[in-house]
Image (cartoon, rainbow, N blue to C red; front, side, top):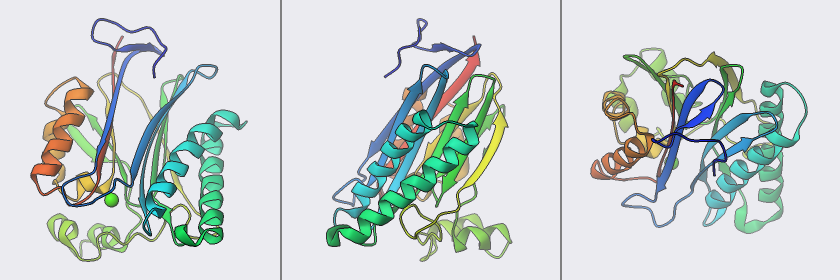
Amino acid sequence: MAKRATDDEGREAWAGFALSIAGTTHVGRVRKSNQDAFDRFDDDTRDETLLVVADGMGGHRGGEVASRMAVGTLGKLVRELDGEPDERLRLALERANHEIHRLGERDSMLRGMGTTAVALLLRPEGKAILAHVGDSRIYRLREDRFEALTEDHSMVARWLKDGLIDEETARNHPQRNQIDRALGAAETVDPDLLECDLRPGDLFLLCSDGLTGMLPDEEIQRLAARSRDPHAIVAWMIDAANQAGGMDNVTAVVARLDRA
Ligand code: CA
């Protein structure tokens, strides 16, 4: 995937950082198909890297089609479009929404399909643009502070935020899988976007709810902090989610930035 120069540990020289990225997905222990998708896209002209995770839903094949369409469309359009990074990301999400929705209306086998999407765009000036729709998440580990930078688009997440329920109740709530924003669900979509700076030592995690539904944040943080190697971290996360039940497809993508 990566064409950049790498050091002995496989870290890429990028924008004054030593960057390492790993991602993996697993069907879990209950589901028969994996409707999660993820990928990494490098734009050598702009010297930026885009990471995307999508968690599809709906129908027999719909979820798989929707999540793959979301990842592929974002990767293609963020590179092809002109404009500021956040506008390219927003427009790409809107177009992906439109295409998934339109195909879902045309094809009876795919009717009602939709997908979450989280995207992290690493920019060479030392910042990241984050975008999301649904309940896939982006976390950041910075020194000892591990926090979700995205807020789930769900009722259960709002109850949690308002202090009406605690984290464990939220994780086990019967309505926890009901999201109120998804790509493809309606003719238009309203993604959340935000920007943050990049610092040496930062670790970003993009994941589907097959991880966060199985493991409390403290456990995810413990695994994220256990090694400097993203490949080891994502492998442990998948194992831990499966050991905790593996009730859903699980996807984890980790990007780590170190001092060059
Ligand atoms: Ca899921």
